[in-house]
Length: 238
Image 1 (tube, rainbow, N blue to C red):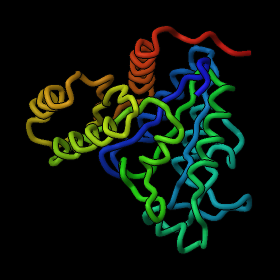
Image 2: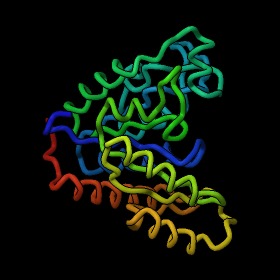
Image 3: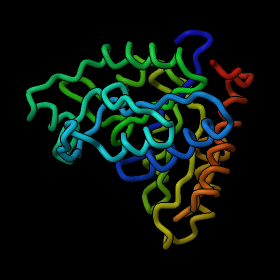
């Protein structure tokens, strides 16, 4: 990445654990400060047919949060069936070009104060033969934010994901807790265990059913802590 570029790759401990929930909060927060934020969902499966082509709800949510209008730039690979991306790509006769996506992301990052790239599924979700979401993140080269969906089993998933991210050579910028199960027993104790196992407190903790104002505040908190890791806040680009 260019020294002037700033961005994060948002991954998760599993699918359906709140990556989009966190990514849109972050994008909206950056935008609320009058800064330019870019978003990408490089690969998405689970889309509906529209008059303009296939559209994925997560990608559309990211675009709405960032004020983006170019769907193809946001979501270059979009597949209709809600299945693993590598299966959807194979079914469509498409080979996901990791290097092409990395080049697109790196180019887009230079245009914004912050680029938020959201992965699909978990860290090692396959994209094709011998390719996974981890390979895409490594090719892009951004620091990684790990979203931990707080539910039974999250400790194991979080530790394994964090270990794999660090072994990839990328910077683990930190982790975000997201309370996807409001009935999780002793969730505070689990958060304390995660802090110990992952070596740091969460960058932010999203409660179940957080309303817009609370999400914006948490997005701002998340952004400020990410900026601290970069050393200084970027100046707005005109």
